[in-house]
Image (cartoon, rainbow, N blue to C red; front, side, top):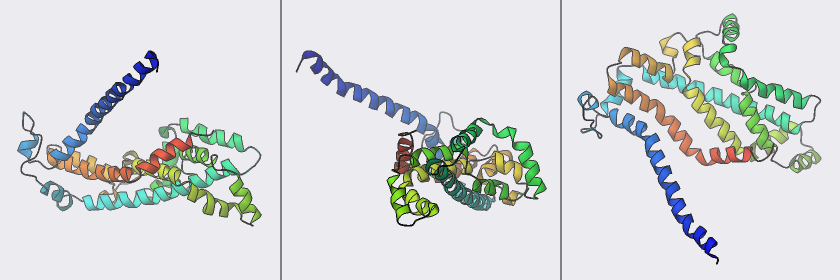
Length: 284
């Protein structure tokens, strides 16, 4: 082994340790707000405002979470958020996969042009179409219902999701389609029985991204929902800040309760999520 190769071999462990150390420091930095939110949600008011700060609650006050459901309509907010998130995600995953399948597998005149048009809508700010969309939903008498937050998900699923799934579908060999067609299968059978089972990582990626976006969405429910009984957790937290702005423990308990489902879903689907992101960029 030459001296240069030996030096390179010796330096690799040191570089790896430095990278790991930087990663640990960054992880601690990013996780500290979550740690502070979780511990503050279990403190008394005196401990929450104490200086110097008290890092760990003693005693642990679980009644802060109980108050969310006894003194505030947090159960209603949660049910509304779950309902809207589930219905929206089902529509987004299915319709975006269906459209992406058409762009990736079907041969039709103007297909590439239409795909470019769809992708170009990513650059269109949501605020641009807010007024005409609101007028449309008002004409349909959908204001103060969950329909504006659910029905649009069943009309394409979003340009980014279509792009992501289309990129993934192009990595699946066309021989599967040809074999299925020779066996008498139609295009929808190919989509449902072949493409979807082979696309679990990409579908999981779309689902996780959409769940996070809908669960934390504040703008949509605020605009289209009027009654407090129809509000979601994101709007409910804003209501909590307005009514109990000085009760820091209650605010942190509400924020932690709203954040925990997203964290659980992400960790459960992390393997599929990372795999879907990686494989979707393998082929253009």
